Length: 365
Image (tube, rainbow, N blue to C red; front, side, top):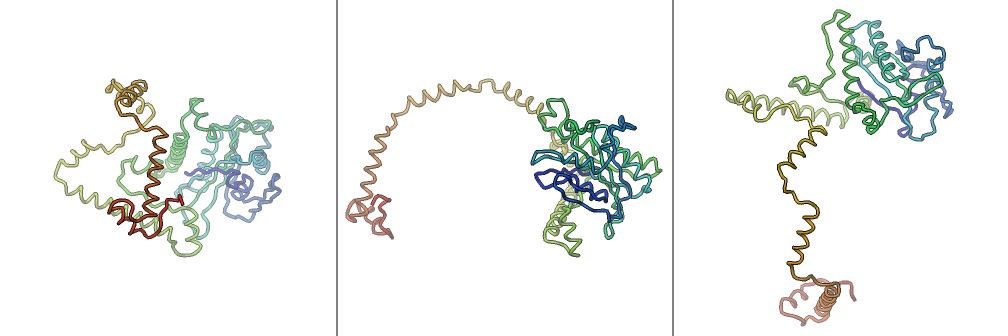
């Protein structure tokens, strides 16, 4: 499951995204541009999902019309406004087409109920020449809640970190992880209902305790470039080379650990636990209080200022601005005399003057 946003700042258009994903022709009433993708033949299912309590409510029929919905989303005066958010999910190829469609519809309904938004759902078949297992779905979500009178306030998914904290909500990262877990639960329920043993896990290999190097993530632009050219690119080769280095390093580490004497791995685990300490704001505050209690004599700002004043009194008086200027003028005059008169000064000074490659008057001539 991946999430991306469409905003004016990066040239995103909700109308263009909806037309492409649904394989339809939509005219953007704000820019007067027309996006026509009606020639697509890989769209096997599409529908606009609204919160369940709007079932049978004709007052929100405007949101069920794809063109009206996304033109309304584009109707904003902010030049950098976010206009849509997309959740893209991969569908298990082991399921039948009907089972995959029901899986996506159930997940879309839960998103619509959870965030009170409209979810434009489209299910796509694998493209010709692509991986035949690449059944996937695009869930284009509105960034504002749907009401009978139009769009309402922003969904909780679009709130800033400060706003989420003020409302007692979890962080966006925690929200995103909960959505990944929710999609994994829906997928596993569908696999179980179909009598299949395959399961998915939204967690990383490290979180699952699996000592395997994750496969290399090739960015979409590089992947499409390599597919169109029919050969690899320097950027893609560099990513794959780094992946091979990580695999080899992991293998060397395993080989070194296998040669350790009995009990060494246990001792290492006791000394260096493999689970990293989770740093939270509460942990930081607790550690700071413990440090402050262990160091009760830390000087205050007033004590530091008093110590500095006492130190300054114990030192000889510093030269005044006039003294510094007088010393600088005297130094400048000595240097001028050295430059103009090679016989001025001692033998060392004369040698320096003779070795100079240019007449250095220090910008005073």
